[in-house]
Amino acid sequence: MLDCTNKKALVRVDFNVPLDANFTITDDTRIRAAVPTIQKILSEGGSAILLSHLGRPLKKLRADGSLDTDKFTLRHVVSRLQNLLGVNVHFATDCVGEIAETAVKNLPKGEVLLLENTRFHAGEEKGDRTLAEQMARLGDVYINDAFGTAHRAHASTAIIAEFFALENRSFGFLMDSELKAAERVLNSPERPLTAIVGGAKVSDKLLLLDNLLDKVNILIVGGGMAYTFMKAMGGTIGNSLCEDDRLDLAKQLLFKARDKGVNLLLPVDSIVADAFSATANTKIARSNAIEDGWMGLDIGDEASKTFREAILSSKTILWNGPMGVFEMDAFAKGTRLIAESVAEATQNGAFSLVGGGDSVAAVTMMGLSEKVSYVSTGGGAMLELLEGKILPGVAAI
Image (cartoon, rainbow, N blue to C red; front, side):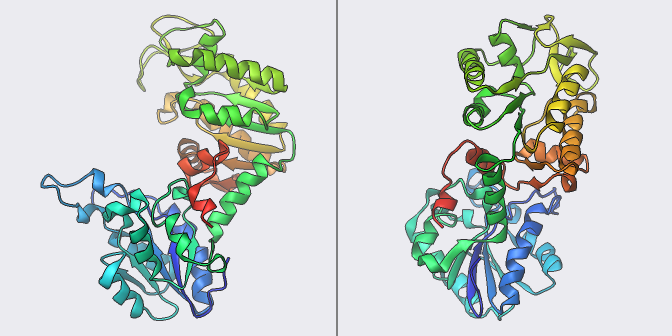
């Protein structure tokens, strides 16, 4: 990261945090993740000017067409950030123009200025160069520490970097650690390398699965998407989730796994239910022989055992997506076992990366986030990185 001695460091952070009805932060993970970068700037006698978005204010306007500034203001973040840093955090009611420029001019060394929501300006999501240039005027150097938005070519995440010389722009500590974790899994893994991919739809993870088949030794597929594979192989899946328009693609992935020598594991058994409900009747069934009127909502005991053995045999593990409807206790057992197995393998010396919103939520909910090697803060960004895409926010630096 850059030396920020006596400099005004313009830092793109990701403070897009969840708020309750009273605008109280319910999860400050993303704020805490930015603290090390901000602390380094302050320790060197620099000042930190923070850019971030919060929500999608232009998609959720008030009835009269005006911005809902009460709901989407970043002022909600100030007190939490101040408590975490232990220094004064000032707030400017705009991120460009006279208001922002005056606030930057008056910012004391060693203190922090949080600028208002970048998405209050339509040019942010459009990657507007004029808006980016106005933002760039506020700092001597630019640091991108917002991995969660690195897959967006927005004004404050990618375009802004063009207005700083190469020696005056860099990644922050969070962005750097995210990229190194993904690099370690994708390009320099200790083998065997196992990827665990779950979630509802094959279509959501198609590029991910295709890219991983070029890299992994073992690919575990669970969640709703597994039933598309089961049907593609000629199985009966009852009322389970299935994308009939993706059956041929599922077959192609199965053939590719065979040709690449990848051990592709599907759940041999499932916990099935007669309704999508926490109180539904349940039983165990073979995943390729589910009766009409029943649907697979979690992996079964035999699948759990097979998956666990594969995970514990691995030296590098990537996990993206749950094994079932883990939000309902009745169908959380499989995802919990995967989380525990990944944690155990990590304790045994494996490197584990958990990336993707639902799997991150699962390890956090189960109290295991400290027992895996790395938990990504960026769901969409990490997914695109693992798919092999170039992220605009990364390319810009």
